[in-house]
Structures are given as structure tokens and as C-alpha cells.
Length: 382
Image (cartoon, rainbow, N blue to C red; front, side):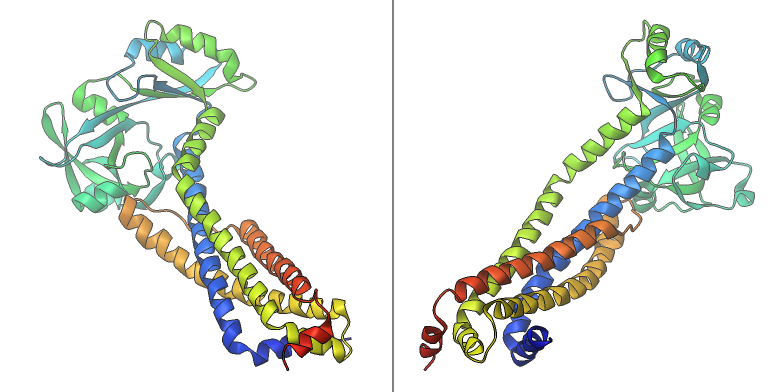
């Protein structure tokens, strides 16, 4: 009852040299695939969480032209906030500023910040408020921290209204939009310093049982004649953002597909070459009394055993490589961090697919190698 697995294990034990070559090829391709899958999944998971933190409202108002030159006056903001069916409306002002001469511009975001900043910003670290409580707070992105060296609790100067205004760094937040860096301050602090009450974007919360489609006409009427703004619901914005994310990582998905094909091709080639080289052995096993199907299942068992080892080593090595991609290469390349998230279902599916492909390739190769008469196969080896 154990002839097939016992023979397969004995064969693997007696051919460690050739088996190691096939195993190494599978491990390399599979570990690369695992590392990329974990990295992309972690990035997408962090991006979705980031969207939920920064865009919690039911509707968003953006400039249809893009940029920060199109502004929404205070009168239009008041008209929108006073509409029936709107529970809350927050507006924000985004504009470029220069922290240092000769350096790229940084985005200044004046927006509403909750009493607990972590409730409205994807904060990574916070400063001790008591140390610098007399100054206005500012929250900087990771890119600003990396490029300008600011740390939580330190003071920083922001050029507002033609003068340098001193703020303290209240925390570090994660930003996936402004590659040059971004600084968030409270909108009321911005208004107190500059007197500018205009806005470039808006977030609108609807009352219960009020739909975005119902409110759209009223909001557009309130925006007129400031009709250069786009109104988009939260689900639509999330879908658009995630589609843009997927388009940006099409090359990575292509690399994953190439890694899968390389792994499957390696399995198929190794199984075919091994089967052809062992035709005489298959013939001898038939003479010793093994059935045709037993020889095939023995060869398939060897492929399953090798691919299972490749999966175990590949998962371990791929996980280690993904740590480097997530915490080192991604951080140094883009000046933002992501949280590690393991796509267990996807990894399990890929692992089972590789094992199944190995078994199928072994069965197909073994069937082709055993297509000739066993007596002739043995005679070739005399």
C-alpha cells in the first residue's frame, strides 16, 4: 500500500544532486513572486486605509481643472453648508509653499483637524504637546521629514502672508499624493494668519436617508457660478483612486506573471528532461511488477514533493525579501511607508497552483516517456 510514495522518496533521496538543481530554480522564481505579491498587497491595503482616513465624507468637491488656482469663495461654502440634507461641510485650502530657497515646493494643506489628530490624519508619530503648547501645530509628511530633517516637537517656519510663521511639528503623517512633501495645519490657524477664507476642496457629510444623487443638483446650484468644481461621491472616488493605483502597478503585475510563467516553465522542463532520462528505470520498474499507473503516480509524487519543498522555502525566502521591499526599498524610493499585510488567500492559491502544476507536468511527462514498450526501454540501457 506504500509502494508509490516509498519509491518516490527513495528516488529523491538517491538523486539529491539533480533534484537540488530543479528545486533551486523553483525556489528562486516562487520566492520572487511571493515577495512581489506581499509588497503590492501591503501597498494596496495601506492605500485603502489611507483613503478611508483622509476621505471619510460622503461627497468630495474638487477643482475640475486640477491644481490649486481655482478657489471656492466663502459665500459658496456657506451656500453649500446651509443646504437641507447636509449634516456637515468642511473645506480646505491647498497651496504650494517653499520651505527653503532652491528646494521643490511643498504642499500646504489647511484643513479641519480633530481634537485627536489621529482621528482625521493617518498619523505615524506624535509630539508631546505640553513641551511646545504656545505654538500652532503642524503635521508633516514623511517626505518633509526625510528631506528637511524635521522631527516631532521641533519648530519650523512656514511662509504665510509674506512672513515667516513659526509652528511646531506636532506629528508625522503618511501621504501618498504629494511626492514633494506636505504640511497640514488647522484651517482656523491659516485663516488667522492670512485672512484667506477661500477653499480649493470640500468634504460633505449627508444626513441619514439622503443620497448623493439627491443632493447633487442642489450642491451644483449652490456652486454656481463657481462651476469649475467636480462633485464626486466617496465610493466613486475610492474606485477611481484604486484604479489609478492598479494602473500604476501594471508593470509589477506583469513581473508577477512572468515569475509565475518562469516557475511553471522550469517545472515543466525539469519534469520532461527527468522523465526522458529515466525511461529505462520506468521500464525496469514495470518488469519488477509496478503497474503503469503506479509508475506515473510515483513520478507525480516526486514532483509534488519537490514543489512542496519549493513552496515552503519560497514562502520563507519571499517573506524575507518582502520585508526588504516594504521597509527599506519602498521607504527609500518614495519617501513614504506602508504597513506589512500578508495576502494569505492569494499565497495559498499560488502555492496550490504550483504544486498542482508540478503534478500535472510530471504526469504528462511521465506518460510521454512511458509511451514506448518497456522491453525496448530497458534494452536501450544495456
